[in-house]
Amino acid sequence: MELRHFRYFVAVAEELHFARAAARLNIAAPTLSHQIRSLESILGARLFSRKTKTAVVLTPAGKRFLDEARATLKQADQAARVVRRAARGEVGNIAIGYILSATCSGLLSSAIRDFRVAHPDVSFQLRKLEPSTVYAAMAEGAIDVAFTCAAERYPAGIVGIALERSPLFLAISESHRLATRKQISIDSVRDDEFVSTELSLWGKIAKTVAPRIVARVDDICSVLTLVSAGVGIGIVPAVLARLAVPGIAFRRLTGVAQRAELVLLYRRNEDNPVVKALIQQMRVRLRGA
Image (cartoon, rainbow, N blue to C red):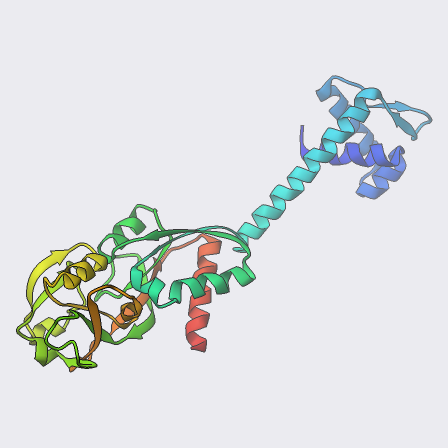
């Protein structure tokens, strides 16, 4: 049994006339008659009783089948609409990995908000990750894209496009000797002890200023916790200076050219229409910035 059988049956059931139904379907009346007989054979039941050569009435079985046939066609049409919208990137789900900076900067929330304007039926699955775990999550298929910090190079098949660059700040204890300053030069803290993540923001800074790292932790929240406890000081993106962390003072770091850079990571061969639509939106957004 095929969908055309349902369409042919409904047309005849609504017209109660083979010639009119055939004209409506744009097929020959003998072909339509043959298809209805084939459907009755498949079902093992008569669906119509003839009044004249071309006029018919529904049998009790035909009346019951009409409701089911209409429901089946409606569901098939709905399925087709969903598929077409999915192919255009209008429906679906996007799994996004992100780091804390992407939230504090408002970059992630604004990207989702703007995307939902044109794609209200797309849902989002968010996963907060650390930079060191982002690539594994992408390799495993756990996330589709990631809002994370830039790297010097990316794994094969992964593309990173820069979204935002911000200055670096020092996170220091409120009792630190330099806490009263609004800005602190990198030379002023050469001899300080630092707390750092494995994937820190030191980057090229370490080539000219060798940091004394006394603790390495897994995430930036742990860095802030240890800084607040007086274990050491940390370097963080400017956007994190918006956080209110008890015991911590955030001060602009001067004397360095480096910036904290947020990027959008995605797979070079991405074929999911809804994910591609988000990537395209971010590219358009950058061109208009």
